[in-house]
Amino acid sequence: MSDTRAPVPVTVLTGYLGAGKTTLLNRILTENHGKRFAVVINEFGELGVDNDLVVDADEEVFEMNNGCICCTVRGDLIRILSGLMRRREKFDGIIVETTGLADPAPVAQTFFVDEDVKRATRLDSIVTVVDAKHLSQRLNDSREAEEQIAFADLILLNKMDLVTEQEAAAVEAKVRAINPYAEILRSTRSAVPVERVIGRDAFSLERILAREPEFLSGEDAHEHDSEVTSVSFEVSRPIDPEKFNAWMTELLASKGQDLLRTKGILAYPGEDRRFAFQAVHMIADGDFISPWKPGEPRRSKIVFIGRDLNRPVLRRGFEACQVEA
Image: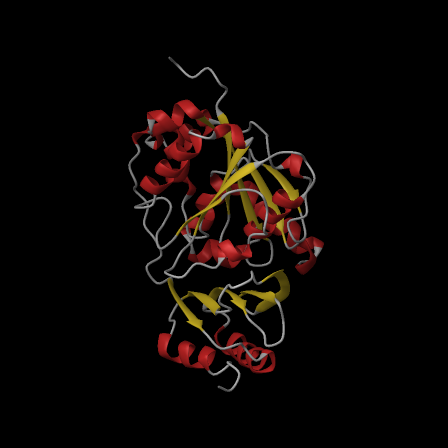
């Protein structure tokens, strides 16, 4: 007996490291729109923190670690989507947040080359979040940043509070040169109406095939920036906020150009809430988020993504931020 239910719409959130994808995802999950979403998150590196950065919500969050969603992890994505289809009455849509280093083409391919996924889901749109302040630099050193823009149906020109109108116009012109078809929305902290992002029915297979005729072959022809690596650390004692701030201030000042993305979940002494720290190059931000769960080990973890990362030095620096034993 064939399934006559309408395919489940899928929104792919992409964008380079630190552009604001998780912030946008949190806005979608917390605004009062009456819809339920299943969320699939992919991370780059052996120790994931993005799942902790996503707000506590009723939605189911599936995390795929240590791989590019467009390579070995695609099988995991197909398995997760297939599993979701067995309980599709529990949600109205699916959101896939890719790692900032993912080429979105193979992600989109998943919804066309696997017959079961193709039958049960519909790629609604690819939404690319762009860091208005750092885009020019990214286009110079990352092919993925350009591909993410090229494949977008909607481009969120984010961090508008960090650029002048003249700089914003220049960035928008670069985006338009890569993708003249996508709608562009400007935002600060990814603040846009949810209905402008979800349920757009905007993905155009015809446009993608015009850019990449081999799209439906399912072959991966992309290459990764081999210089970009990830290191991550976890410690058991609480973090001294003064030590951490002093270390991070010095580290970002001296190595900020090589640190594409820094993110961590920290346990501060005497504080029941988790502290979420994030940085893009030298621009850092942090705030308290949800409380630690009862009985949950209060372990702090941090992830660095960048070039020329010195693992022993970074490990010693982070461990030195712990309170005295």
